[in-house]
Structure formats: C-alpha cells, structure tokens
Length: 300
Image (tube, rainbow, N blue to C red; front, side, top):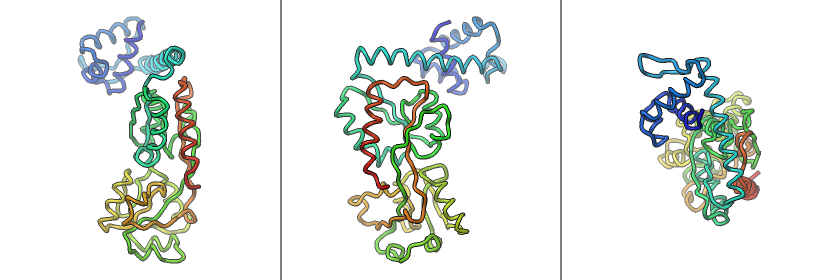
C-alpha cells in the first residue's frame, strides 16, 4: 500500500468522486488515478466504491472506514515531514490561513505584516470561507490555522484558542437621526431598516438573540457575509448598518458616522484553531503569538 493510493482516495472523496478533477488536483493523468484506486481496492480485499456502471458514485461502508483512516494517515505523514523541516529548514514553508472576510480584510493585515517581516521566506496563503467551511478545512488539514468567531469552539477535533473580544457598531450616512438619538436602544434600532451579517457570520446569532430576548423584531432588509458590501448599501441609503466595530475605518469611512453598540449586544470572541492531531511548526506557533499580541489591543 502506497501513500499515493491513499492520496488518490482522499482527493477523490473531496472532489465528490470526480476522477478528472482528482487527477488535476494531483497533477496526474486520469488513468494513473484509476490505477491507484484499483490497486488500493485489491490490497484491501473488499469493495470500496459504490458504482453506477463504470462510474464511481460513492463509498461502501468499508470504503468510508478506509477513507477515514487514509485521511488520518496522510495527516500524520504531513506531521512527520513537518517535524523534519522544523529541524532542517525552520524558516521556509507555507502558512495556510483560513479566515472569514472580516478577519482577512480588517484584522489580519497588521499581523501578516509583522509575520512576513520575521519570516520572509514563508509563503502565506489566505483561504476565505464561511465559519462552517473553515472548520472542515482545518479538520482536513487544508488550512493550518482557521480564524473566525462562530463554529470553531463547537468542534471537538479542533484545538481552539480564544484571542480577542469585540462588539458591534452602528454605521449610517452623515447626518442620520440615529447618530444623535439618546438613549440609543434596541427599540430605536427597530424603527429603521437594518443591514447586517448573514446568519452564521460575525456574531449574527448574538445579534438576533438580543432582539428576541427584548421581544423585538428588527427590520433586516439586507444581509451579507462581506462587511464592505454592507457599507456599500448603507451608502446607497438602503438602511443603517450593524457591523463589527473593528471594521470601521475612520479615514476610509469618514462619510459614515459610528455609534458604539456594546451596551446593547453581547460581546463576541474571535478564535484561532487547528486540528488537534496537527504538528505545529515553529512559525505556526509564532503566528499564533503574533495574532494574539496584535489583537489584544482590540476593543473589549
């Protein structure tokens, strides 16, 4: 049994049994992938695939078990190689970060600037996705570190590190009555159309819970995963925006007023996570320390 056979199996599952896409990802010809899968099935001595004619469309019960162990074997192989590289060439490599748009756009730049200065020969890759997607990427070792607010702490297979707390801010074009109303309450917010994050992103659950506990129903007219999209439609006059306060940029957003909403909503915690069985290289640990140090000055 060879690692290339296990790699073909795991990649086939990730591409939803598309042999041509599997071959492209592995930089192989399709016949080589097919041969790897046949050899693996022969060595295991049991049917691994559900077939529809000649096409592979799924895994048998045995195949699911083999695929799970194959994934674990590949991850451990990566750990072995990482141990060696830390001793032979600790300053070179690739750091794959998974992050939501808010983290990638507003939180990561100063951290990456410091990291790149310390490790100029480490290639940085940023993979953006939903919190749920980031969990899967980290578990499958497709990113080294995942950064977001939701989902990470709910997965037992991840080692999760709380990094910083944040809350929300109200943004609206200047002048706008909500920028001056006192006191600013949840009920006052409900009198205006609201633009905020889609459910599952950037504290939307806490946002909805706050209104529900007060017996109120906000008039959300648009929701998006991207803070810049929210700002765009606030500027278009579609409604007021409720965003992560840290995403307000005083110079870039000078045309928008900002009100602190930390008295109205619960504080959120952004976390950084990685697979529990992953060997962290020295520069992985350095990045985590830099991220914690840089974000410790965030509000809250």
